[in-house]
Image (cartoon, rainbow, N blue to C red; front, side):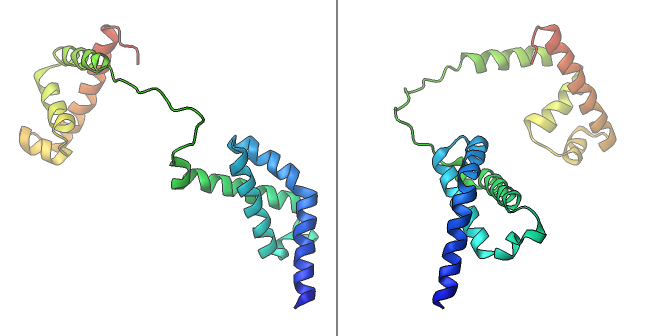
Length: 171
């Protein structure tokens, strides 16, 4: 048992000495976070220790395998809830006071643009977007076939975009 532990310790130490610096630099370039990079390098080396068969020379480059594992860990971290956690900062941010004037202005502009649409186009947008109805539900409320609702929605959005562009809205 002692020889196996000694061999494992030598493997991890050799991997660390040979690859940890380059691996850490690579992970920092991916994450921009030095502390997170340390954690990912440790996890990468731990996975190498758990799967020594992956490090056999006939299976390819050890460094390539380590970099691939590290990249996948970074991707997994980005996709997980850990990447959406609050970040610690040195300074407390100023309290933000929301200015509702931009939202009011945008809603006024959209309302004005809607007046430029035909009554049928306004009705289909009202049902589908403002009331949140499905195509089938909107068709039942409006008394038209579902295909007509789809077609009117398409042309209504196209005409609304055109009306907004004519009013100077560029986004």
